[in-house]
Image 1 (spheres, rainbow, N blue to C red):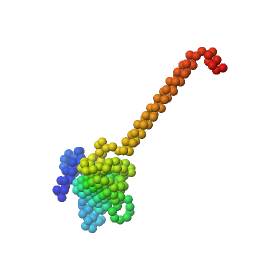
Image 2: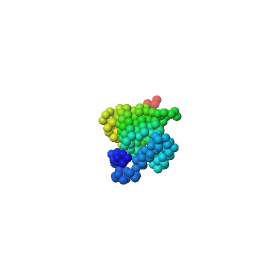
Image 3: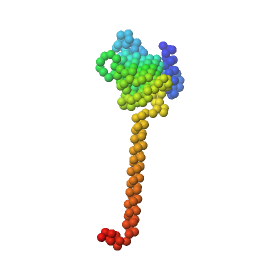
Image 4: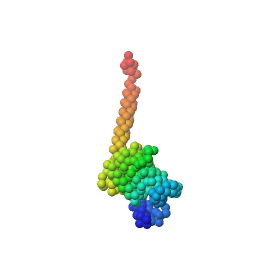
Length: 241
């Protein structure tokens, strides 16, 4: 018990630069409190004391703002940063070293009994506000961007962003081992964002071309008006006749 607690506190220091002391983490981090409320509620649940499990989970939710169903399976050194608004469903499974930020939902998409919530592999990072829905598999080391909505499997080390979630990086072994706060990977190229940027630049070029044409037309009109003013009225009348 105490050995696991020390590991959990150390994992907070590894993933949150704001953590200063072990005492601060132990007393002021609701994500850590929620994990230990879940351990207790899970014990009741697994021993057939279902009401006690749900009641303990409910108390943990009131105190931390984090809702974890006692039926959920959570691995070691799972870190819930900030935590407010996190919801983890009954059949969800989280591997070791998973990181969740506030507003994350691991939800189900059916009312049928059985497996209906996602499974997160080891070292997965889920950004703030992301929604992972259904009995899908998020591979080891995958990164889910903030506010993404994911309804399909994600390969190990992959990075998913957007609504609906789209895979912008298939990752690899190196990606699995690299922690990224809020699932933000530096120098990550999103092909959709790149295409939009190209369209924006093209639009700016067209706008500038229109401005240039307008200036040329105004200059030609001024020149025509100047020539007209310099021409004697007699010649103008003769030209009209």
